[in-house]
Structures are given as C-alpha cells and as structure tokens.
Image (cartoon, rainbow, N blue to C red; front, side, top):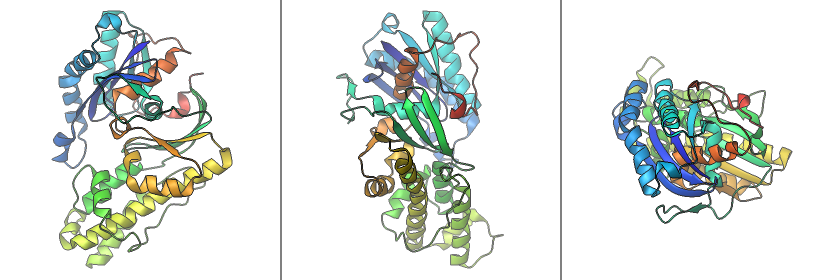
Length: 359
C-alpha cells in the first residue's frame, strides 16, 4: 500500500511516499530556515505563505522521485494537528483537495505521534539514500519526542495504543535552545548553534537550575532558560533591566561557549533523567528518540551512558519535520481505522496526543 504523506505544521513543506509503512520511495523537504533566520525565529504569516507557494511542486516532486502516477497512490496522509494554524491549513486543505480530486482515502495524522514513526522506516528505493535503521522498534516502546515545539514522553503498547507519561508545561526543549542561543548571540536555529558552541565550552562552568515538577515525567524549560539569562547578567555586571539582546556584546567567545555547554548539559540531563526513570518503571522492549533534537550529540551520549539497551534513532533527515513519518503513521492507521471525510476535516492547532489514540 503506497501512502503519500504531506507535512506542513511549522516551517518545512514536505511530502513523501512510503509503501506499507516501512519502505521509503521518495522524500522531499522544502525548508524555510533561510527565510526565518533573518527574524531569529519562525514568523507564522511568512511560513503559511511559503507553504502555499511550494506545497504543490513539493508533492509533484515526491511523486516523480518515486516514479509514480496518482493512479499508483492508495491513500493520502496529512498532518492536521498540532502546529501553526496557517501552516496546518496550507497542507490540510491541499491534502483534502487532492483526496477529492483523485478519489483517495484521507488519513489525518498527529504531528507529534508521527515523529515516532520515522523509526519504523527501515527500507528504501534506489531513489533515496538514507542511513536507515536495520530493524523497526518493538513494543512496548518508550518514546522521547523532542523538537522545537514539543517535548513529550510516551509509552506505546502497540500502534495507536499509548499513554502520554509527561510533557512540557511551558517551553519545549528546542524552543529553549532557540531562546538561549538568541541571548548568547548565536544564530537561528538555536539547537545546532548551541551544540556547536558547547563543543568548545566547559559544561561545569555554570550550574543551571532544573525544574522540579510533581509529575516526574513532565518537563519545564522556561525556568532554566531564565536561569541562564540571570547568570549571564551577573557575569557581565548588569541587572534585569539591561536589554537581553545586548548581553552577548559583553561576553567573550569563551564565556559564550561555557554558557552554551552548561545549558545544554542541564537541559539534556533533564530529558535523560525522565527517560531513565520511565525505562526502569515500565521495562520497554525498545526506546526511541524522535524529533529534531534527537540529533543532539550530548543527548545521545548521556542516553547511551544511562540506559542498558541501545536507543533507536532515525536518520537526521527523518528526525526533523518530514512527509515520510506522516505517510508511515498513515499506513498503520489505515490498517485499523476508517479514512476521514475530506469535505469536513478540520485542523486542530493545539490537539494533545492524549486525545488521539486510535485503537
């Protein structure tokens, strides 16, 4: 069964064709990073307009790369939640229109859940060349989902049967990396910038306080981000009234590196502590790290040191937002649930994974 997946929840316009949930036939991603770098973050209105401009060509390219016609496609899967409303509408309305035009079943996919399914793609056609894992995860599966907008820990008993153990109560970890990078004068996106600076820094130079929450599986990164801000203000001898965007001008490169390393170590330790606790409590058969932050070297290092089993990762091209993960999840949904009516499907920008189990 060949599924076309469409993803447009934030600032990547992506489409891919996946066969039977595991074989990648094409993978096309149009990134808007260059556009939003000028503003230091994603501008929702600009993101939506960019999606509208390129979503058609991206889908056409995905079909061409897979060497398929519309008659070869069995169904369409599209991200309908959560994300930026304008971005979601661009992809969802396109998917709805194509489903009607070509008379294809339409499966709405939850973006955060889809990130996990990038790890189920283990084979590919000659048109794609990615370092895929040799085997898919097995259930029960513990998934740490970490990206610019989401930080969640979920336990999957089977496809569509999962419980959300915890999630961020404010900033997602990727968002916190972006904000700390901005304070330090590092370029957007902040995750790679902070990680690069941290390589030359001392992670023990500063102690960054970590949030303590009632649910040990919940996360909070707003406080640690503010702790970095206050530590930098003390370091350069100014108070809280000093403009944060001017602080980096008073820091040496060595100081920037140390703050980057200290924040990264603290943020990653928060993620790893919760993941280790969940592993001990639930004894999953596999552990998956999904989302853009899964590429972070410090995160992979700490997890490998703290967990007794190998952690599974998708290649970086499938960690960031992509259509392949959407198509894969769409396939597994198609084996259990009926397709949605393309005439009435709505976008849900704030839908939690708690409300999307589908078995």
